[in-house]
Structure formats: structure tokens, C-alpha cells
Length: 274
Image 1 (spheres, rainbow, N blue to C red):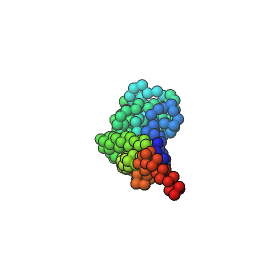
Image 2: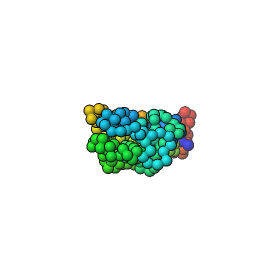
Image 3: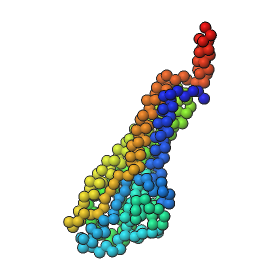
Image 4: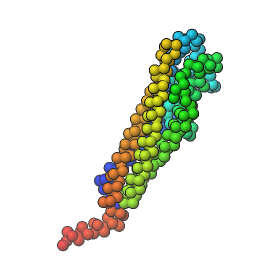
């Protein structure tokens, strides 16, 4: 393999950093029994105060919440819903694991539609009350949230593939490989940054429409918060962008192949002799 110059080494390091960060983002909420995936999330929906709000409004909500394994719909609302890129998990705490937590199961093109998850868990006799209690804001806009976060999912996938390809090409230590590493780094940055922007804007709009909602003069008790996997994605996008310049410099000033290295070394020896 041709010698890696300093710029190429920096580019490889940054591309690898972006790839590792994307791995962490991709595994968010894919398992209920593993601590790391359960600790990573794009967004969290906290419904722990919703029961009190329903009671204050005059509704009977003693059977609103459920726990344990979920075997069918309408077995009880969970206090926390944590969303990843491939699945969401729900339970009595944000980081809980084991039998008190259930996960939706990984699926391609998972979207962020919290109202669907909530209504699928709410007991049948409270469906109408809960539906009427939720505000008609972005939080309840299933069509909008489904389409835009599903688009973000595809951008995540494209960005993840692009940064891995960028890193693999960089290992080839060839001028043209460095060029394509830089180009794939640009693709990765654009895709990851676009996905991160979508999620950031969506969560911001959802938060503004639900966190301060009121029911019968009482706070609704449902809040949405940003997840750490979102900031990890921003970090991955930044690392992908920073990898582009070193790869371009390696392409411009590096030698093209092992043969060039060999000829270069022969010229060095000749110059030292004479």
C-alpha cells in the first residue's frame, strides 16, 4: 500500500469518527435489553403527567397506564416513549430495560408519530377522551410527521453508507481514491446534515405544540424532548465535512501509486549520490 500522507491520515480519522458516531445513532432503541441502545434516542415523549390532567378534567383515568410485556393493543399507556431511527421503546423510565419495557420492533423507514403510539396503548374505554384531549398541533399531525421523518430516515441511510464508503476508499491510499473519498464525504455531510435539520425542526415544532398545552386549566402533562442521538448525528455530519479538505489535499499533493513511491525513492537516492 502506498504511504499515507499526513492529510490522508487526518481524513481517515475524521471519516472513521463520523462512521462510529453513525453506528451509535443507528442502534438507538433497537433493543429493550441492552443498555447502550436503550440510552440512545432521537426524541423522548414523556406522558407521566397526562393521567393527572385527565383526572383534573373530570375523566376517570385510573386504568390509563399499563406496565410489563405488551401482547396486544390498548393494554395501557407507558410513561416514556423513546424514539430511535429503526424503532421506538416504551416503559416506566427513559433508560429502563427488561420486562417493564416493550419495543416496537425494528422496521425500514420508521417514522416519528407519537400519537399513533399513544393511542395504540390507551385502553379502549379511554380512546375518545384521550383523542379529544390532545391538541390539534404538529404533535397530532400524523401525516406530516410520518412523511417528513421517513424522508429523514432515508437521508440517514444514504449518509451512513456514504461515510463508510469514504472511509474504505481512503484506505486504498491512491490519489483518485482520496478524491472519491472527499466526494463521498460531501454526500455524507449533505445527507446527514439534512436529516439532522429535519429532526431538529420537527422536534422543535412538536415541543412548541405540546409542552405547554393545557387541559381544563391544567398542564396536559405530555412533553417532548430532544434525544442524544440527534446531537450524535450533528457530530457525525461535522466530522464528515471536516474529512473532505484533508482528502482533497491528499488527492492534490499525494502520489498516485506504489510505483510512484518507488520512482520517487529512486530519485531521492540518485540526488543524494550526486
